[in-house]
Image (tube, rainbow, N blue to C red; front, side, top):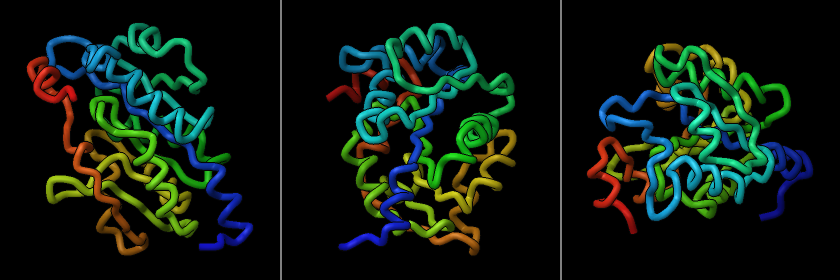
Length: 202
């Protein structure tokens, strides 16, 4: 497929936003820094984001943010603190998107507790994006769709307005946007409790 110059340029402005601000109360500790296959989970996710998007990565932190940032050092990523993280996931999405909305043509929202997400899958999401500003490319797994998800710039106003525990999935049924998906079953592995770590490690 030959890309138009406009689409080719836009694909260079895709930012990966890794959400790592939550309290993870069910885990009983700072889940983001827990080791998964020899590496902190948040580091694994950030490495995948960096391999796919280079320096165009954003790490959104909140709870125990010093420990989370320390687990990622050295990093080329931009660090954004969400002081409203206790209000829910939506505030972290809004924080991350707001930080790049005037320079990004699309963002990929990623979760720090999906340790099996790969850089190749992130690249597939980017490759599947047509360049349309009102397009969403989600990941499909376990008969559902969710993160990692690419949102083009036409979605930014809605993402920046998210509050509480409302996530980006609310846009999936909004008729203003077109929704595509790429299958990747390992995205269905998320870590909620310590025992999930050993059970899910490759």
